[in-house]
Length: 230
Image (cartoon, rainbow, N blue to C red; front, side):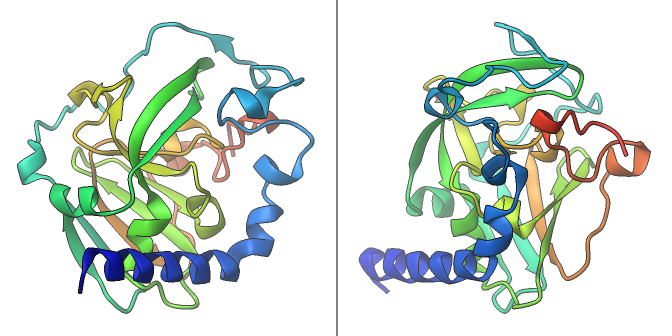
């Protein structure tokens, strides 16, 4: 298949996946509430810049399980499996073959700090998911990271256009301590929902709680609702 044919097939699969979850996506707080939910200065226009309980930081603090996997881009792999018709393993080169996205979004940590306006480069998570052809009843994602960390999000959050698999931040390769070579970002949710060192995305028919969700943190994690704990 030519590159053009591949792109057209991915776009078609992306649109079908979004169409299935359009109503649910529009009902999520980041789109339904009367307050912005994390992505870019235009979405903060005329609204408070920070969610309740957050403070602004210019630094980028590092929070994780204390393990920093050292993975070269050439060795990175992402498995996408579970409730899908075409499970696959993506390499970094495969990632670069997808449509590249430059976006600016905010990063809200549940420990009360927010870093605004981070410029990212990566690919839409929904495009990677579309390659695996999720089953009609696949409604949830379970992220597995190379350090053993896990977390979960529903499909209606995963398919938003600013939810990305990122490999650059501030115009440079994503640093190891921030999840490089590739991590997930979820600007509309608290940042723990975006796994660093992403290694596997498991498509699920029923929701499953990840590391922090099992330890008292919110299963939904909407920062503008101060939605921190279960």
